[in-house]
Length: 141
Image 1: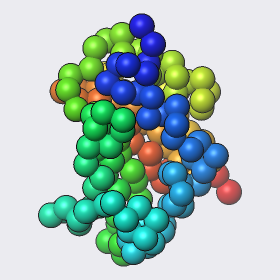
Image 2: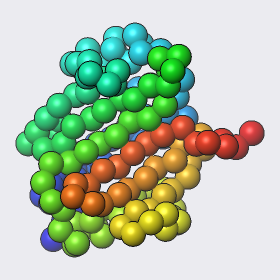
Image 3: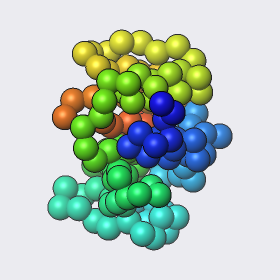
Image 4: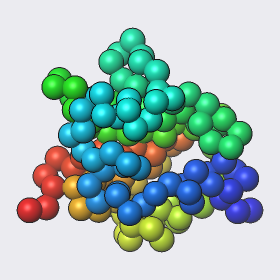
C-alpha cells in the first residue's frame, strides 16, 4: 500500500520542503498574520485567532491551520487529516518523513519528532492524524 491513496498523504509529496528549515510552504516563522493571509488568500479566520484552509488536498481530506503567537506572528502550521488513520498508513507516513528529515525521536505514544533548522516536525496519531510544523523552541544558531 502506498502513501498517496491512504488519506491523501500525497500532500507531503507536493509540500515544498525547501523552506522547511525556516518555515512552512512560502512563509517563514514569525511572518505577520497579514502576510500569511496575502500569500494564502483562501484562508479563513477561526474563533481562536488562527487561520484555516479547510478541506485541502486533492480530495479535501485535511485542514491546514496556521497558528500565531500573542504578537500575531506565525508559530506553527498543522495539517489535520480527517478520519481515523490505519496503523499501516501512519507507519508509511512516518517512513516518508524519516526519508525527508532523517531520524526522529519518540516523543510519546504514536508521536515522533524531527528537527530541521529552525523547525520541528511532529507526527502524531490519536483519534486523527496530524503533522505539525512549528518553530523550534531552541533553534540552532
